[in-house]
Image (tube, rainbow, N blue to C red; front, side, top):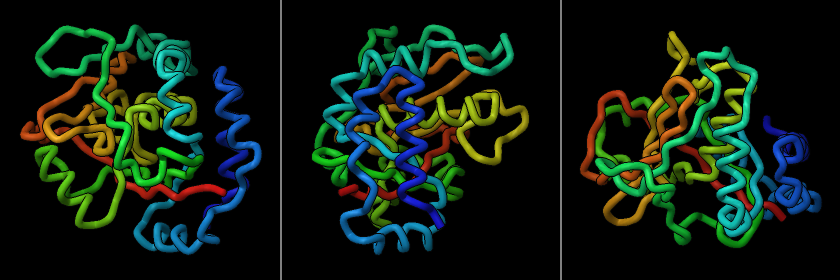
Length: 228
């Protein structure tokens, strides 16, 4: 069972540690779910056993440059050869880094107007390896699942890095646990979706066409639970 108060407090401490005090302040008065936990129970039954608390999406987005600096540039407790280096951001696939990312601001499952928990399974969705972005989105829609946004990915990849001392993106990591590649399903528009990769300490966020397919690319699923 996930304890909402504990998750919110742990998330707040993480934000304070990483120069996001305003995010932490937003969570100070949030310690309950608006539905009294019914959706949390359903999420747990679906295997979503990890969670992190976030401020409303607009607050995340207005601090995006600061977020990239804190989560994808600053040193972390990893070996020197896996230390964070300059991230690569692009709103296209076969284009140079331009500092932009694809991230929609609508259809975010309640993230738009409230603080929330993102409750997720800390392991790739087993039957989504190698599917196109469009196929994965259709699969998520049929299940009622939410994928990751770009800001959520940046926070969670840093949290995993500090917890496990490598650049995995799962509680049980492959060997060697040095990189990952993920569709960020709740980032995309009708044609593109941001793809996150971590390779030897470089966080890469690039937009791939939804028709793109890569057999080594995973995705994570979860639920958005609004906080009161």
